[in-house]
Image (cartoon, rainbow, N blue to C red; front, side, top):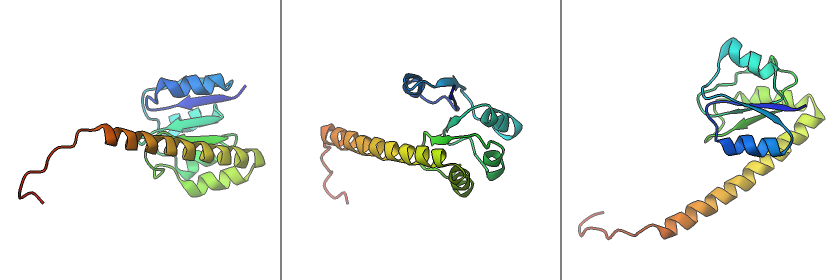
Length: 133
């Protein structure tokens, strides 16, 4: 059975979506670090993080069975991307899942951009004060 751990109070809809895909999901409200993080990584196939959890090279290397890392935040600076890429290249399955995850992220990004444009158009336009630059 494939398992995922979602850290830092990731929205319950992520739990629902992963569950619909047949994954067993554990949710935690806080970030993990050090031994607690490595223990969580070693007992799950996927991990979802936000900006407070930092996945360093030694964390990633400690979890050879980790299939995917999901960043539910802006950017990926909290993940050692070189170590994650090296880990992904060790397994064709991981590479495929990495590609699928990247594609899903791009689709999500387009949807988010469309919502932002739609909401921006619906926002009231405040008149500028004379003399304002």
